Image (cartoon, rainbow, N blue to C red; front, top):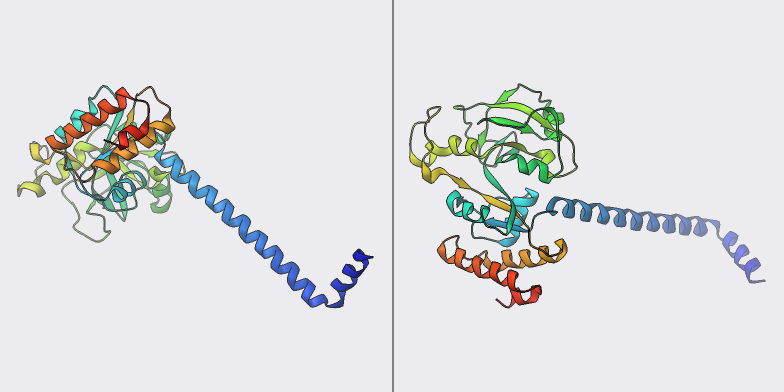
Length: 283
């Protein structure tokens, strides 16, 4: 009886019934789309930060530090001396330390000075050519190669800063020696070279010297923007991420000097002597 009345009611006003079905279908489709987008965003965010336990950089906003160093979507907080960063690169608790040096771009795509470990971190391979070895040799991300139709052996000049319009460094030409495989991560939209390339490109700008090829790099020009680290502590990756991120948030407002080195040493000692992350937060 109830089913019969419901059936007749559906056909009593067919237009209302059709509109209700359309709205219900649209609602379900929108909700399903939002769930899929959320999963994709979470996957992208987690895949880019996997393996990064600590980010070492100049003082500034912790959020800006993570966005600019890991996700490449913000301006850097500044540079730190390479000698100070090198202390933590050689720390026994650090398994891998990857320096990042920013400064230039090519047609809006960042040129990043780093090491081959950065390519391995994102599980990328060299689909064409080889890894950069000499100064001003570059490996191009797969998306850049497609968008700009760049091939092996091509040469280009970098533009100073993050903006596409700016001073062009015509003293040095970058040479494409490799093209990275697609990964779906930030490395697909980066141009990678040696850290020394960035130093040599900007050494004259920092000291008012005339840029001459093969000129010795001034010691104060040896700076990096960030240092991505992976520790070798005997803890689970999830717990270590929580601990290290807390460390980054706590000490971002302390300049990278002897004072910060002392604080970081205390943090390392705290991590060593306890397995409870909340003890670190009480430091």
